[in-house]
Image (cartoon, rainbow, N blue to C red):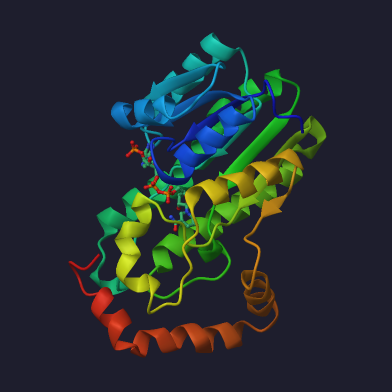
Length: 268
Ligand SMILES: NC(=O)c1ccc[n+]([C@@H]2O[C@H](COP(=O)([O-])OP(=O)(O)OC[C@H]3O[C@@H](n4cnc5c(N)ncnc54)[C@H](OP(=O)(O)O)[C@@H]3O)[C@@H](O)[C@H]2O)c1
Protein backbone atom coordinates (compact mmCIF):
# COMPACT_ATOMS: atom_id res chain seq x y z
CA UNK A 1 0.00 0.00 0.00
CA UNK A 2 1.42 3.34 -1.01
CA UNK A 3 0.94 5.47 2.11
CA UNK A 4 1.78 8.95 0.84
CA UNK A 5 -1.30 11.14 0.51
CA UNK A 6 -3.59 8.64 2.24
CA UNK A 7 -5.93 9.82 5.00
CA UNK A 8 -5.44 8.05 8.35
CA UNK A 9 -7.38 8.50 11.58
CA UNK A 10 -5.54 7.55 14.78
CA UNK A 11 -7.36 7.26 18.11
CA UNK A 12 -5.41 7.95 21.29
CA UNK A 13 -2.95 10.11 19.35
CA UNK A 14 -2.18 12.39 22.31
CA UNK A 15 0.42 10.09 23.87
CA UNK A 16 2.41 6.87 23.68
CA UNK A 17 2.06 4.61 20.65
CA UNK A 18 -0.63 6.82 19.09
CA UNK A 19 1.58 9.90 19.17
CA UNK A 20 4.52 7.92 17.76
CA UNK A 21 2.28 6.55 14.98
CA UNK A 22 1.20 10.10 14.13
CA UNK A 23 4.78 11.42 13.97
CA UNK A 24 5.96 8.52 11.78
CA UNK A 25 2.78 8.62 9.68
CA UNK A 26 3.28 12.31 8.90
CA UNK A 27 6.91 11.59 7.98
CA UNK A 28 5.58 9.08 5.43
CA UNK A 29 3.32 11.72 3.88
CA UNK A 30 -0.07 10.71 5.26
CA UNK A 31 -2.83 13.17 6.02
CA UNK A 32 -3.81 12.65 9.63
CA UNK A 33 -6.85 13.00 11.82
CA UNK A 34 -5.86 12.76 15.48
CA UNK A 35 -8.50 11.75 18.04
CA UNK A 36 -8.45 11.77 21.85
CA UNK A 37 -10.18 13.41 24.80
CA UNK A 38 -7.42 15.87 25.76
CA UNK A 39 -7.06 18.68 23.25
CA UNK A 40 -3.75 19.90 24.74
CA UNK A 41 -2.21 16.42 24.34
CA UNK A 42 -3.33 16.23 20.70
CA UNK A 43 -1.95 19.73 20.06
CA UNK A 44 1.37 18.61 21.56
CA UNK A 45 1.46 15.72 19.09
CA UNK A 46 0.70 18.11 16.24
CA UNK A 47 3.53 20.42 17.39
CA UNK A 48 5.96 17.48 17.16
CA UNK A 49 4.99 16.83 13.56
CA UNK A 50 7.21 18.49 11.07
CA UNK A 51 4.86 18.30 8.15
CA UNK A 52 3.62 20.40 5.31
CA UNK A 53 0.70 18.00 5.10
CA UNK A 54 -2.61 18.36 6.92
CA UNK A 55 -3.07 17.28 10.53
CA UNK A 56 -6.59 17.67 11.88
CA UNK A 57 -7.64 17.21 15.47
CA UNK A 58 -10.99 15.94 16.73
CA UNK A 59 -11.44 16.07 20.50
CA UNK A 60 -13.72 13.15 21.29
CA UNK A 61 -14.43 10.32 23.69
CA UNK A 62 -14.70 7.25 21.48
CA UNK A 63 -16.93 5.45 24.00
CA UNK A 64 -19.73 7.98 23.31
CA UNK A 65 -22.01 7.49 20.29
CA UNK A 66 -22.51 11.26 19.89
CA UNK A 67 -18.75 11.80 19.80
CA UNK A 68 -18.30 9.03 17.21
CA UNK A 69 -20.90 10.76 15.03
CA UNK A 70 -18.95 14.03 15.37
CA UNK A 71 -15.78 12.21 14.30
CA UNK A 72 -17.62 10.89 11.21
CA UNK A 73 -18.90 14.37 10.34
CA UNK A 74 -15.47 15.98 10.81
CA UNK A 75 -13.69 13.41 8.63
CA UNK A 76 -16.36 13.59 5.91
CA UNK A 77 -16.26 17.37 5.85
CA UNK A 78 -12.46 17.78 5.97
CA UNK A 79 -11.25 14.73 4.05
CA UNK A 80 -14.22 13.32 2.12
CA UNK A 81 -13.31 9.73 3.00
CA UNK A 82 -10.89 7.61 4.99
CA UNK A 83 -8.13 5.21 3.88
CA UNK A 84 -6.92 3.98 7.26
CA UNK A 85 -8.63 3.73 10.62
CA UNK A 86 -6.16 3.00 13.41
CA UNK A 87 -7.98 1.91 16.56
CA UNK A 88 -5.18 2.56 19.03
CA UNK A 89 -6.76 4.18 22.11
CA UNK A 90 -6.77 1.85 25.08
CA UNK A 91 -6.39 1.63 28.82
CA UNK A 92 -4.64 -0.99 30.94
CA UNK A 93 -6.28 -2.65 33.93
CA UNK A 94 -3.82 -4.45 36.18
CA UNK A 95 -4.01 -6.01 39.61
CA UNK A 96 -5.38 -9.01 41.48
CA UNK A 97 -8.69 -9.82 39.78
CA UNK A 98 -10.66 -10.03 43.02
CA UNK A 99 -9.55 -6.57 44.07
CA UNK A 100 -10.92 -4.94 40.89
CA UNK A 101 -14.40 -3.49 40.46
CA UNK A 102 -17.15 -3.99 37.88
CA UNK A 103 -17.05 -0.25 37.10
CA UNK A 104 -13.31 -0.19 36.33
CA UNK A 105 -13.53 -3.33 34.19
CA UNK A 106 -16.60 -2.10 32.29
CA UNK A 107 -14.90 1.24 31.59
CA UNK A 108 -11.78 -0.58 30.33
CA UNK A 109 -13.83 -2.90 28.08
CA UNK A 110 -15.74 0.12 26.75
CA UNK A 111 -12.51 1.78 25.55
CA UNK A 112 -10.55 -1.32 24.48
CA UNK A 113 -13.28 -3.41 22.86
CA UNK A 114 -16.67 -1.76 22.37
CA UNK A 115 -15.30 1.59 21.17
CA UNK A 116 -13.12 0.18 18.36
CA UNK A 117 -15.99 -2.06 17.22
CA UNK A 118 -18.50 0.81 17.28
CA UNK A 119 -16.10 3.33 15.74
CA UNK A 120 -15.28 0.91 12.93
CA UNK A 121 -18.99 0.44 12.19
CA UNK A 122 -19.50 4.21 12.29
CA UNK A 123 -16.58 5.08 9.98
CA UNK A 124 -16.77 2.09 7.61
CA UNK A 125 -18.87 4.01 5.04
CA UNK A 126 -16.04 6.55 4.76
CA UNK A 127 -13.56 3.77 3.94
CA UNK A 128 -16.04 2.21 1.50
CA UNK A 129 -16.39 5.63 -0.14
CA UNK A 130 -12.69 5.41 -1.02
CA UNK A 131 -13.24 2.01 -2.67
CA UNK A 132 -10.99 0.25 -0.15
CA UNK A 133 -8.59 0.81 2.70
CA UNK A 134 -7.50 -0.73 5.98
CA UNK A 135 -8.67 -1.07 9.57
CA UNK A 136 -5.76 -1.42 12.01
CA UNK A 137 -6.53 -2.65 15.53
CA UNK A 138 -3.88 -2.21 18.19
CA UNK A 139 -4.13 -5.24 20.47
CA UNK A 140 -1.38 -6.68 22.63
CA UNK A 141 0.72 -9.82 23.15
CA UNK A 142 -1.69 -10.29 26.08
CA UNK A 143 -4.36 -10.87 23.39
CA UNK A 144 -2.62 -14.19 22.63
CA UNK A 145 -0.90 -15.03 25.89
CA UNK A 146 -3.00 -14.00 28.89
CA UNK A 147 -1.01 -13.02 31.95
CA UNK A 148 -2.07 -13.31 35.58
CA UNK A 149 -3.11 -9.93 37.02
CA UNK A 150 -4.10 -8.77 33.51
CA UNK A 151 -7.04 -11.19 33.08
CA UNK A 152 -9.74 -8.65 32.13
CA UNK A 153 -7.30 -6.60 30.02
CA UNK A 154 -6.29 -9.82 28.23
CA UNK A 155 -9.98 -10.54 27.60
CA UNK A 156 -10.35 -7.14 25.92
CA UNK A 157 -7.43 -7.85 23.57
CA UNK A 158 -8.53 -11.45 22.84
CA UNK A 159 -11.86 -9.89 21.88
CA UNK A 160 -10.25 -7.30 19.64
CA UNK A 161 -8.25 -10.05 17.92
CA UNK A 162 -11.45 -12.05 17.31
CA UNK A 163 -13.18 -8.98 15.93
CA UNK A 164 -10.22 -8.37 13.60
CA UNK A 165 -10.28 -11.95 12.27
CA UNK A 166 -14.00 -11.96 11.53
CA UNK A 167 -14.02 -8.51 9.99
CA UNK A 168 -11.03 -9.33 7.77
CA UNK A 169 -12.88 -12.32 6.33
CA UNK A 170 -16.04 -10.26 5.85
CA UNK A 171 -14.51 -7.23 4.12
CA UNK A 172 -12.03 -8.90 1.81
CA UNK A 173 -14.30 -8.58 -1.26
CA UNK A 174 -14.55 -4.83 -0.63
CA UNK A 175 -10.75 -4.38 -0.80
CA UNK A 176 -10.74 -3.41 2.88
CA UNK A 177 -7.97 -5.14 4.81
CA UNK A 178 -7.76 -5.64 8.55
CA UNK A 179 -4.47 -5.69 10.45
CA UNK A 180 -4.24 -6.83 14.06
CA UNK A 181 -1.20 -5.50 15.93
CA UNK A 182 0.20 -7.14 19.09
CA UNK A 183 2.92 -5.04 20.70
CA UNK A 184 4.78 -6.37 23.75
CA UNK A 185 5.52 -3.90 26.58
CA UNK A 186 6.06 -0.34 25.35
CA UNK A 187 7.42 2.65 27.30
CA UNK A 188 4.30 4.87 27.42
CA UNK A 189 2.14 6.50 30.09
CA UNK A 190 -0.02 3.34 30.11
CA UNK A 191 3.03 1.28 31.09
CA UNK A 192 3.36 3.34 34.28
CA UNK A 193 0.39 1.39 35.63
CA UNK A 194 2.42 -1.84 35.64
CA UNK A 195 5.94 -0.41 36.12
CA UNK A 196 6.54 -2.50 39.26
CA UNK A 197 5.73 -5.72 37.36
CA UNK A 198 8.17 -5.17 34.50
CA UNK A 199 11.25 -6.58 36.23
CA UNK A 200 9.68 -9.45 38.21
CA UNK A 201 7.60 -10.55 35.21
CA UNK A 202 10.64 -10.35 32.92
CA UNK A 203 8.88 -7.98 30.49
CA UNK A 204 10.74 -6.04 27.84
CA UNK A 205 9.72 -2.45 27.14
CA UNK A 206 10.18 -1.16 23.60
CA UNK A 207 10.41 2.48 22.54
CA UNK A 208 7.12 3.78 21.13
CA UNK A 209 8.95 5.23 18.10
CA UNK A 210 10.45 1.83 17.20
CA UNK A 211 7.05 0.19 17.62
CA UNK A 212 5.44 2.82 15.38
CA UNK A 213 8.06 2.20 12.69
CA UNK A 214 7.40 -1.56 12.84
CA UNK A 215 3.63 -0.96 12.63
CA UNK A 216 3.81 1.40 9.63
CA UNK A 217 6.13 -1.05 7.83
CA UNK A 218 3.52 -3.77 8.43
CA UNK A 219 0.68 -1.56 7.23
CA UNK A 220 2.64 -0.67 4.09
CA UNK A 221 3.02 -4.36 3.23
CA UNK A 222 -0.66 -4.95 4.09
CA UNK A 223 0.16 -7.44 6.85
CA UNK A 224 -2.74 -9.41 8.34
CA UNK A 225 -1.07 -9.17 11.74
CA UNK A 226 2.00 -7.56 13.27
CA UNK A 227 3.87 -9.22 16.14
CA UNK A 228 7.20 -8.25 17.75
CA UNK A 229 10.37 -9.80 16.43
CA UNK A 230 12.18 -12.04 18.92
CA UNK A 231 11.38 -14.82 21.41
CA UNK A 232 7.69 -13.83 21.56
CA UNK A 233 7.20 -15.79 18.31
CA UNK A 234 8.30 -18.98 20.10
CA UNK A 235 6.05 -18.24 23.08
CA UNK A 236 3.13 -17.77 20.66
CA UNK A 237 3.78 -21.14 19.10
CA UNK A 238 4.05 -22.79 22.53
CA UNK A 239 0.81 -21.09 23.61
CA UNK A 240 -0.99 -22.54 20.59
CA UNK A 241 0.54 -26.03 20.70
CA UNK A 242 1.34 -26.63 24.38
CA UNK A 243 -0.70 -24.17 26.48
CA UNK A 244 0.02 -26.12 29.68
CA UNK A 245 3.68 -25.20 29.37
CA UNK A 246 2.74 -21.52 29.41
CA UNK A 247 0.24 -22.15 32.25
CA UNK A 248 3.06 -23.60 34.33
CA UNK A 249 5.48 -20.75 33.69
CA UNK A 250 3.08 -17.88 34.16
CA UNK A 251 1.37 -19.42 37.20
CA UNK A 252 4.74 -19.45 38.97
CA UNK A 253 4.70 -15.65 38.88
CA UNK A 254 1.87 -15.58 41.39
CA UNK A 255 4.22 -17.06 44.00
CA UNK A 256 6.90 -14.41 43.46
CA UNK A 257 6.95 -11.98 46.43
CA UNK A 258 7.96 -9.04 44.18
CA UNK A 259 4.97 -9.70 41.91
CA UNK A 260 2.60 -10.13 44.86
CA UNK A 261 3.79 -6.88 46.37
CA UNK A 262 3.36 -5.05 43.05
CA UNK A 263 -0.27 -6.10 42.67
CA UNK A 264 -1.38 -5.07 46.15
CA UNK A 265 -4.18 -2.47 45.88
CA UNK A 266 -2.76 1.04 45.62
CA UNK A 267 0.48 -0.12 43.96
CA UNK A 268 1.34 1.09 40.46
N1 LIG B 1 2.25 0.38 26.59
C1 LIG B 1 2.24 -0.94 26.45
O1 LIG B 1 3.03 -1.66 27.09
C2 LIG B 1 1.30 -1.60 25.46
C3 LIG B 1 1.58 -2.92 25.06
C4 LIG B 1 0.73 -3.54 24.17
C5 LIG B 1 -0.37 -2.88 23.68
N2 LIG B 1 -0.63 -1.59 24.08
C6 LIG B 1 -1.83 -0.94 23.53
O2 LIG B 1 -1.41 0.19 22.79
C7 LIG B 1 -2.47 1.15 22.75
C8 LIG B 1 -1.93 2.52 23.11
O3 LIG B 1 -1.49 2.50 24.44
P1 LIG B 1 -0.26 3.35 24.99
O4 LIG B 1 0.62 2.40 25.70
O5 LIG B 1 0.27 4.23 23.95
O6 LIG B 1 -1.02 4.16 26.15
P2 LIG B 1 -1.25 5.71 26.42
O7 LIG B 1 -0.03 6.51 26.18
O8 LIG B 1 -1.91 5.79 27.75
O9 LIG B 1 -2.28 6.10 25.27
C9 LIG B 1 -3.63 5.75 25.28
C10 LIG B 1 -4.40 6.86 24.59
O10 LIG B 1 -5.77 6.49 24.52
C11 LIG B 1 -6.54 7.66 24.67
N3 LIG B 1 -7.86 7.32 25.19
C12 LIG B 1 -8.14 6.64 26.33
N4 LIG B 1 -9.46 6.57 26.51
C13 LIG B 1 -10.03 7.22 25.45
C14 LIG B 1 -11.37 7.51 25.08
N5 LIG B 1 -12.41 7.10 25.82
N6 LIG B 1 -11.59 8.19 23.94
C15 LIG B 1 -10.56 8.62 23.19
N7 LIG B 1 -9.26 8.38 23.48
C16 LIG B 1 -9.01 7.70 24.61
C17 LIG B 1 -5.75 8.54 25.65
O11 LIG B 1 -5.95 9.92 25.36
P3 LIG B 1 -6.98 10.84 26.18
O12 LIG B 1 -6.76 10.55 27.64
O13 LIG B 1 -6.59 12.23 25.77
O14 LIG B 1 -8.33 10.47 25.69
C18 LIG B 1 -4.31 8.18 25.34
O15 LIG B 1 -3.71 9.14 24.50
C19 LIG B 1 -3.54 0.63 23.71
O16 LIG B 1 -4.57 0.01 22.98
C20 LIG B 1 -2.79 -0.37 24.56
O17 LIG B 1 -3.65 -1.37 25.08
C21 LIG B 1 0.19 -0.93 24.96
